[in-house]
Image (cartoon, rainbow, N blue to C red; front, top):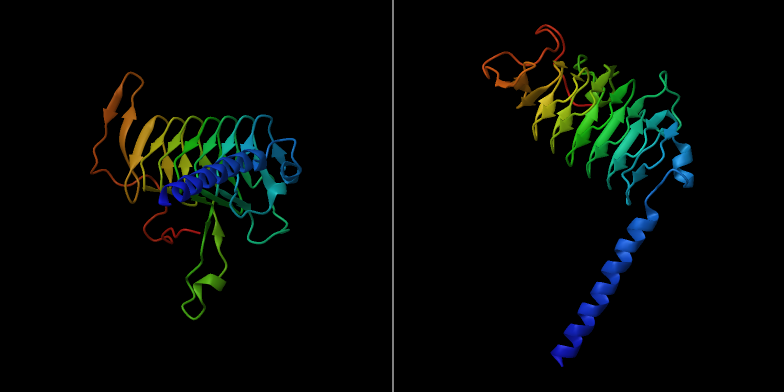
Length: 230
């Protein structure tokens, strides 16, 4: 008796899996679908996989052409739905990008991601820090500060990386998995660690290993507020 029951369970399970895959394909958002019209720009050939993450402020978000946004990706502009923003776009993602599953891109002023940028899974990108200076007020209720973020074309952001406010990542940069990046990162370099440090760079002829004892990438001076994830 176990044989027929096991076969029936297997057949039903396979039917459900096929149905789920079909539903995911059909539910993906393309440029001609109603959800795409809420975005400031939504390029041809671009797709947001199903299920999406929780996001809002689509009016202030521009997405280029032939870009893939994976499932469970959160892209938001502002703190709450229908918030009026002071810049447009707040979040800009270029052409032919791939944004990995579980990534969060939370913009308040300016996050500019160039063309052909790929991210791994669970990357976090924000342009806002929490305020914490008043020790008599909860940190969550203090005024935040914004600092624009840019990621140059052709770069790769490894899984679990955190891109903090003020990060200016050049073109063709590798950010290692689980790295925390702020400040200026030059073109054609590899940055790893917490805080992120440039460990390799291209001198125009070949890749060279940098001294890993060098100071972290340029960021706030020691007497300024340290970065906190927004």
